[in-house]
Length: 353
Image (cartoon, rainbow, N blue to C red; front, side):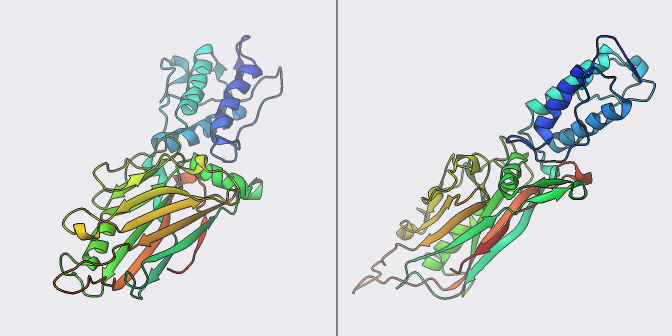
């Protein structure tokens, strides 16, 4: 391979450094091993080196767009902007046009590093769950449980590339990963009688497909939606359903303080105002903290604050909730085909409800 006099290893190193910032191991990167490396100063960059950085750029590009670049005849290169990215042969002359094309491509993946195509993510990866079948809502008004997620670190490239547990957590959210939290309630008699507390809890939890906790916010997704939207803004997840009740927040992973002993409320919804408005004081609440750099701790609470309602003569009756309550924690993780961008899910342990 030959080069023009104006194209030096410094120009190659600039675009390789940009690619490394996106795909590699750094606080805003994807945490993946790199095929490419910087060239020695004032050297001729080989075709192998050019194709290595090309491979790395394509890995990031596929993660972001789920597309592969287009290729032109190297002797007639016209398009210098994505999705075009020329292959380099041993006899290829690295022209200004090719260098511009490669530089533009590296800038594209850097500009779009917070775009994560849904086809490059695997949703609904099971982490942990717990169930309660004992009655509650009468003498026991509040039930809650704690879910601890641990990012354990990972290796790539046959063990040659190692990621620490703390960095694992960062890369999970950098690459579009998010935590999915949901609850379901199946009454002892199903369907339950309309206007009962059992009906209220079933209706409340069935409204949500999931509550998702992403890089920079927490949102709710309705049961009628599907998890196919592109994850953006550092992995905040699919577009939220603004028609749903409840209060989500702008708190995500990167807003948490490592080592804090205080929990931050990230979601709360109350009982529906209609048709079961006598249970509007009941709540479904999710809080989170980050005890260590590699762990997250969620507290999920079902508050049955309704003290009973008078249905005739005599005292108000605080009916119990009877049935099976399930609290489920899953995640959506980056798992690009062909090893483009792949970050493992965390493991989890849940206490009893």
